[in-house]
Image (cartoon, rainbow, N blue to C red; front, side):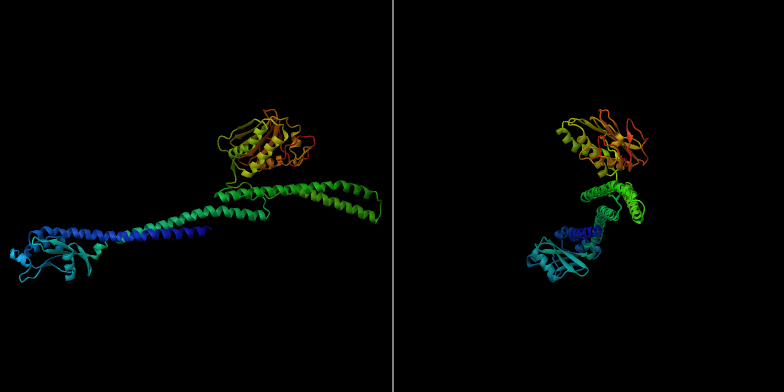
Length: 481
């Protein structure tokens, strides 16, 4: 894609440069020619006053010799022979014997001179080494003399080569510049696509922590967001599958216990010993399945450069979403600490999932009309997000934090707080549950900015989040998103 953009830019710019440079070069050449002959016409017109006064050879020789063109041998004057009317008036036009008078070096042909006299305006004729300007001038006798001025080819093309070189340089600079810009644009488009392809390859190899920075053109940014969301879903689904495998395996322990007791009562004998050995082997296999499912972890990667997000922006976006439902249920909502950007080393989809889990719990497990708030506190080494409500509170915070312990709440899986925990612990932080100033529950998310652990294990009436603990069934569940 990168080289395709460069080739397209090169072709388009080259066509534009040719379309403008070639006509402009021809215009420059024509302007140089017009300038040269305009100057020649002005210099030739300088002899008109002399011809209007006299046609004497000596006078004309001196007048031609005093000009720069005459001294250089580029100026000539052609005076026609005297007519009968001019002769009767006593005017000395032409040479004796009726021949015309010529001063200087003649280059133009007789036909060109005759044509100029007939037309009565300046003409240009091509000669060896350049061109001649033939300027007609009326004499007092009514005849027409012709002033011939030689214009060398170098004077006609003076400055044209320099102008063409400048145009060529400008054209080359435009082409190089357009190629460079197209290359940078191609890099901006290709690099996010390459990162997306690399992350997809890593995810296909089982590296479930592969994520893509959400940057680049809008289309690729949208694809990166979709990929990260998909990867998060894959990780969550695999975790759910492991939990399900562990739970199903755990249920086999009850019939295994019965089999073991029955096998023990079989007495002695080869058949009894084989039965007891088979039961023990089956029990070991079930224990191995449970332990493997519980301890299996997806391959994760720490947040790389560009993987963070603006917590204030995410909170504003999610609160805009949940505020509509809060208004329908008559809930008062308060948001604080989002007036300025707060960068955290957490991917945007992970923070969105965590906030949706906590806010969803508020709506799911508190009565309608219950107020809640979200506060963001930005410190030197950590960012704290507080989600508080004015509900009845939690009877057993420790049990509420136990992953997979849904209690007796219908429709709850107990995975919501685990999503929040994993997000916080990936930055070296933690999650605590306590009592809020609103009178209900306060969930505090400690997000580390420098990779260090949260300060202490006990908060104000709170509890540090445990790992995969099985709590009692009498707690109010907050763990489903």
